Length: 304
Image 1 (cartoon, one colour):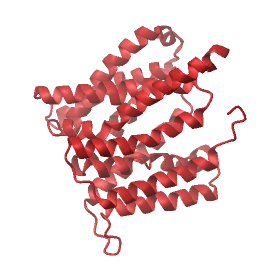
Image 2 (image 1 turned 90 degrees about the horizontal axis):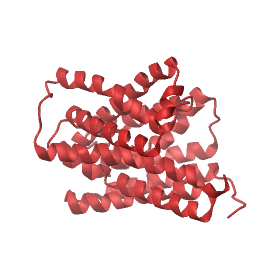
Image 3 (image 1 turned 180 degrees about the vertical axis):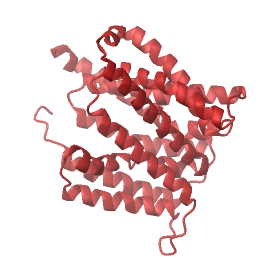
């Protein structure tokens, strides 16, 4: 057990964590590029397919197929429900938000999911709401209001109220998924693979309903491949590896705050979006709120 938390292990954890952050930093840009060629339901179908394929490779490489034998029938049934929410409903709503909003706004609003998780944990997990959580909520959702109104706070003129509502609703779905995930006893990579596998029939039906089941342009396939392999697949695998190898979880977790900054640079340079002052101000408020929330959760690490 000692070797997992050695200096070498910490270096590996840092590499895995930075790799995940680098992949997540491209999310907003990749989504907008892909949605230029595909509808939200098309993008999700193709991305989920590529995610399932890359996770099949990862499971084979990590020799984890034996975990399938230990799954109970109830866990297999639960996998259908998990897959319905992630990637199913969550990404359909999130992609719909990205389809309507500038990438800079959608990605900033999506960062509030961690705070949503804290609030949902009160009724569903019996956790207590502390003053730091309320303060974090005021700061974060103040930032949401700045972004949603594009700085027009007094007039409350929303840039795209439907898009903002979809982005915030996606955080509710994602937080709810992770609350349900606290009872999930499946091996994480196997569980993620099953989610995508069981989601595919549902996504096929959704595409049939919207008459979107046809072969897209190669640019759309390439963009969906990138989203599926890196954002939905390998990024989570790398993050799980980082969490497994480190004993400084708080230090590694704080690296995620690099992602929105890098993301804005990519949005500006690749998508050629003019970054609004309101987006910068709102994002700073959201990240400040999340920092306040994490500060109250962090315990002193005597080993540092």
